[in-house]
Image (cartoon, rainbow, N blue to C red; front, side, top):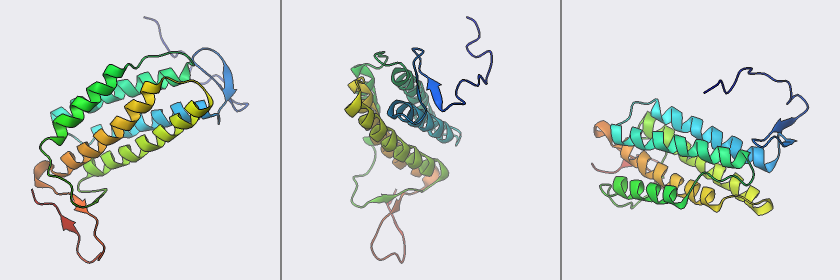
Length: 189
């Protein structure tokens, strides 16, 4: 296999345009570029979660997610090209169900935090929701593979559950929202 990037700067984007995977040039602030750029940002934030030193099952799941996000970015960068199948959404659902099975039921809202890994995972969840909104905006204007939207929707749910899991690593706890703001309440282990 040859080199994919032989030259990092090309100067072709100096006019405010960028090239899609099919060679088409479009504005850098287009809905399509915003969508795949936000998916790329999400992938970077997932990488930040992975850098926190996670339990192996969580790490394994997030590495798979990164590969799927790269696929989604590729789809969005090449109009009409499809890499994600509904099996990828089902894969996320099975992973989500597996991690959620041992968590206590929610009785309060959870604030982002609990540990650095959990906080980073909450950040990834919010960036995922933004990516989902960007892809939805694009889908309202152009044809996109609907599986991408489903994948991002399930992924934000998975990231929420993983944040809950990570808050409990090494005896940690989740930070719960409450009205009185005097003393934060935490969920028992």
